[in-house]
Image 1 (cartoon, rainbow, N blue to C red):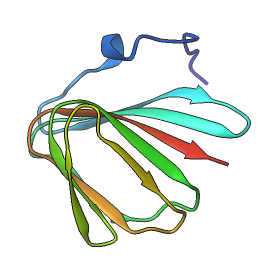
Image 2 (image 1 turned 90 degrees about the vertical axis):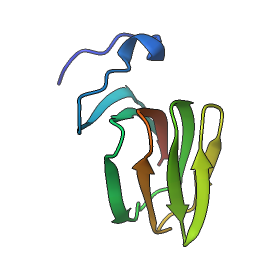
Image 3 (image 1 turned 45 degrees about the vertical axis):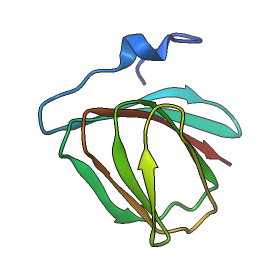
Image 4 (image 1 turned 60 degrees about the vertical axis):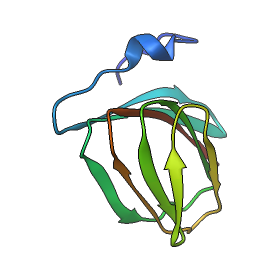
Length: 104
């Protein structure tokens, strides 16, 4: 397992790869996991579900999040919460960075 800096500056970890998606786990706790996602403009994540409660905080960029058929505009500061099993997908309309938090 790669070592992780405690209390990292997320802005320093944001990296975009043309056409790609990067993810980096920044916290693995007993009851909470946090992963930083960086999506290049035009990339996306197809519809899927998670077995745990989840929340997203947008840090940088813009995109469209579809949660249970409802479109949500993603921009810095937007917070999205999801119940377990909720179908969702997203598309980055410009380089997009967000923090995904999963509960236990």
